[in-house]
Image (cartoon, rainbow, N blue to C red; front, side):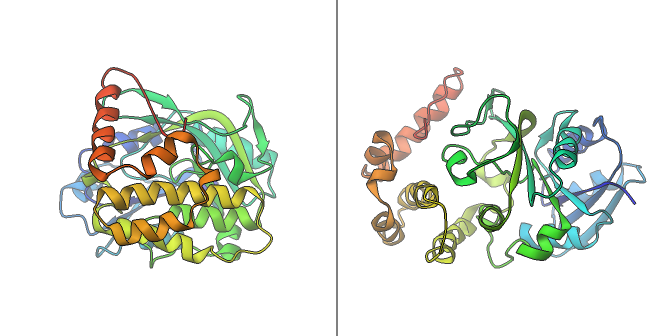
Length: 312
């Protein structure tokens, strides 16, 4: 039995899947299997994978049921007690699995193990994710997951190792959510379990055009379900409200750009202004056309290796 099962949901990733799998084959840690779940791709993704002759790969093909179902199905078919997740367009550094497994061996009773990651943009620039109040050499349990995730999330879907016992206790990815299901699961785990984190960056979050993401487009509206699900949480840490308000800010801006003013106004009313910084408060109250312009300027500046964010 392999020590780690790598679950890869696959939907129309013909441009990326070969490089993604190469980043797995180049790992220093080799005791793994790869479970690929083709979620009804209508491009050459499945054909590209089938041409790779490696006994550690198992491919399943399903109809298009969304990334949550694909991940849950892959987990159900895995042979290890440890699940590493990897999306079909992200990349691992060569030490990624070793980084996570060392963290697991050091803190085996945690419910989730997460590694730091780079954000790699369309212009090729790599930026380290920005964690709140986490030392550059942190390797161990995170005292407050929500506080540490005010800027970038400690947990990200292509940089975590999850024991099966956590899924058995907390539940799987919510298949009713076609977007935001990752955040939903990390919240459920963080409210109940300890989370261990390695500040050593060992994976790359590839920031692509929206059309390449499995849960994008119209499904983004599902992120609204997050706020109803966790509206009446008892005994949550003090940081939880601010963490959720920062998520509300992101969704509100998205809804405003989409001209969904009804949901924008509903979300905005739930945000405490004290939980936003000055830039975020200005943006939240700006016209949608100006927000769209600021987004385009942000992308232009990235082309000149200048990164600006309302979270910094």
